[in-house]
Image (cartoon, rainbow, N blue to C red; front, side, top):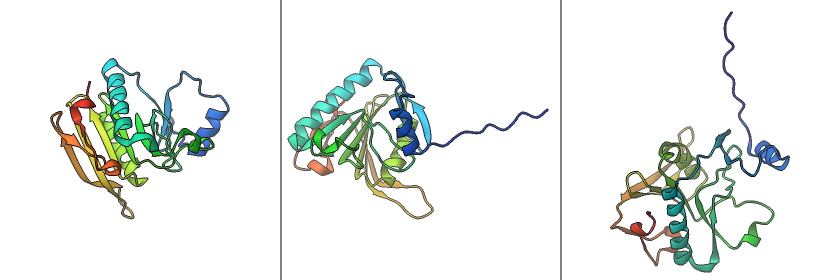
Length: 190
């Protein structure tokens, strides 16, 4: 007797949100919707948590009070994805998002050690497709900052960022949305 083929269900963002509203996910469930798949988020180790905290503080200093630096909160990017990036800098205040999560961001940052392929391959394409102008990966394994800018989408092709660079701890960077000030890459790393 043949074993039936494995079938998976692709979820939409609306179905995912309804499941959350119905209480299917508990407060302890750390999940996110990525391209129709509900993925569990790995537990954070100390360096990962430290890098999130350091990056949050650096971005708050850099951008000032006209933005909200959201930490691990949903970002609506397309009908099949609702990632929870480690950090997303969005215009305005928390009150501006009382009725709906943001649909874009000035800057999205993922802190990565064990999730580098997810962050580089899947999330980078999702953020490019959503038109996020700038995406950073604080790469803990290589102790660098990967910077992706200038998203492009061509019909029938994957969305990509045209510009990419790796910065070392001794480098400085100015985000596109706050180009008059810089931060040291070392200030983002634990």
